Image (cartoon, rainbow, N blue to C red; front, top):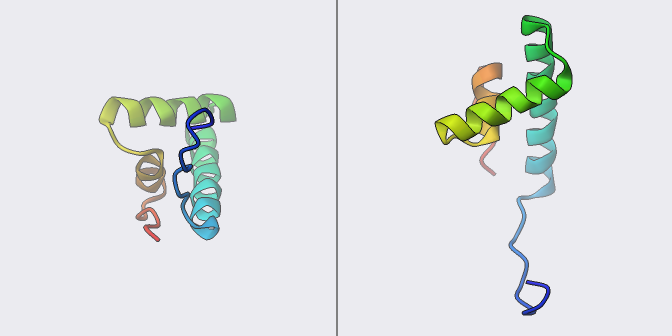
Length: 72
């Protein structure tokens, strides 16, 4: 993009991004408490599950927290 002058992709609204990362931090805390992991290991586990399942990190977060990810 930098070399071609193409437009950067449109990002999600700020509120959605903030909600996603706040919820992801909460999900990390849940895994730390439930499994006795470090925060780094909990996030790595979440990312590995997202890769393995083909789900997004937001979906994995929602699965852990038990509520749907924000859509807008």
